Length: 120
Image (cartoon, rainbow, N blue to C red; front, side, top):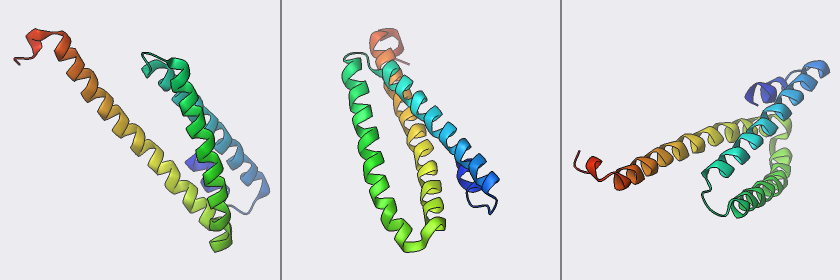
């Protein structure tokens, strides 16, 4: 996604189209990976978990699209690119924190299920 965003900063229409294609591929690949992750992590009510994810997905898309209009008025295309790059950095940071939280939660539940590990 980041490479695709950066390519849209170029002057060549052909390069911009390649950048948009990379951006779209990265975005929908990420969306599919997160949908899979939500489905795997939901022990109960998988449908509700997927529904909540999709609700947040579309809400975020609507709000961010609206706010990007103000970003466009502020500094035109370069501000859109910088804003999207910032969002592309925030996403992996959230994923790393969620993975860390998931590891802490799974190790705590593992030790509760195995009383022999509590004394270690």
